[in-house]
Length: 390
Image (tube, rainbow, N blue to C red; front, side):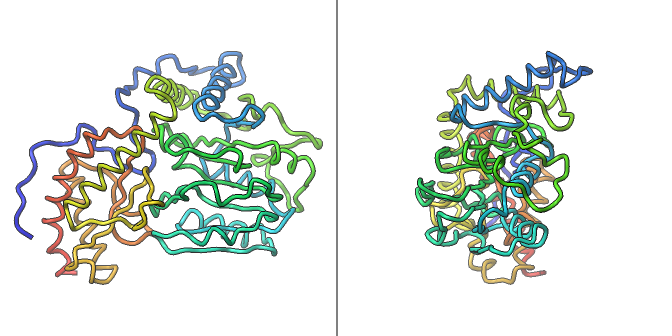
């Protein structure tokens, strides 16, 4: 490649991590001055803020009124684990996996819960398994958007409206950036740290009436840790879905999430959030076509994520090398960008093929991506020779 001059313009915010993600535009710590610090989350003030968070979430995402929404511990992971441990075992289970987090749920179901009637449908990074293999009389566990592969399901049309089993959807990097068909989802989870740029450790759990019916009619055969319990004495713990959390939440993180939700409302709600994410993806696609050396792990545009955008090096001189050599180039590229303070944390996930992962969710400004692209080209020109030494 010919030498490329170091760019003069830098991204205003170089935060392109896939979690915790960029704070919303205009965010400052001063915006959290009204946080209920030093107050009990069970106080009138604390419960009011937690309830407000649930109500604003429902309104922005247009979650049906008869769906329960709870704030749970341990981020999206905790929310998914609560669903798996509380609901699975009543029917056979279909598991879909095409990246590392989906693979983690497979491990939990098979090796931890030790369920026997399990079918696993797997696809390599960058692809989806055949969704038509899913059977409507079985429970289903899947990720809506593969955060480590940059692959999302195209829609919910493949899920039967007349299903007998439950659908358990990990939507952590999809919620607030992609439309979710609530009538096709019985359990939906995500964390605050993704699309709205909130703080880590808190998760969200949304249950359909069908999921609640399962909770009330089925008791798993294994011991249930307190932190996973959604029922007591044969009844749903309704308080969990009114802000009465299982454990103590961070009221500072709650205030931060409330700020993000209010920002989302001001800019136009879900449609605006989706539009911002899709515009960012389109901007990256145009740059990749111009650059020539970078391509998408998800070759099929119909399943390409608009949040966790995963790129590979398609330059023939590097693409033909083994994974270790390609990783050497991408890691050198990432080091150069971090050293210049123009992009942080954009290396591919540790289990994914070598490349880059650029978060393009709603809190990322398109102009920051546009400022990043010349730096990517510059850094690649610097890093490319590293392949010869690998």
